[in-house]
Length: 145
Image 1 (cartoon, rainbow, N blue to C red):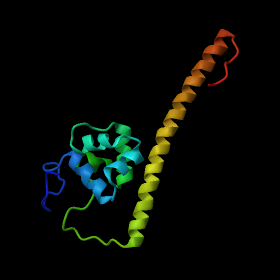
Image 2 (image 1 turned 30 degrees about the vertical axis):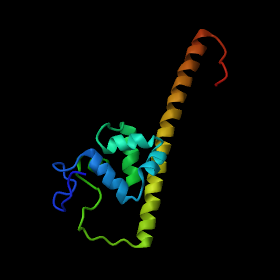
Image 3 (image 1 turned 180 degrees about the vertical axis):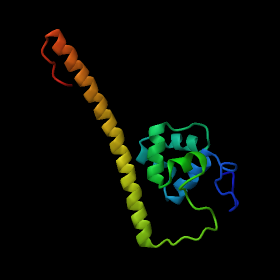
Image 4 (image 1 turned 135 degrees about the vertical axis):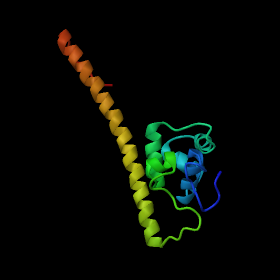
């Protein structure tokens, strides 16, 4: 990571997207392999993102923010709801950490469901277009595959 001082911690001037991603992943207690598994990508992909050698697509960015418990804006720019810098006091009880973990899990599941809904909607649109094409041609519908 580029910025190690408490002042300017993950500001736009001192940290990159990869720095913020790595810090948020570590703060969430996730390994690169664990995060990759949750996102459905290879560990090498996470490594590339953290080293700023590649950038995730928009749908992965949203999932990352949800899984890591940070705002999308913070992940991209360093501004907004993100992780705390060094020296920032925080009350971290086991109960609060458990609730935070549960919330992160739900956010990840919701992101996954949203992606799945998009795929189903796309298939539905394609099927409806196919249906409209068959009806105008006077042919019976073929069974869905």
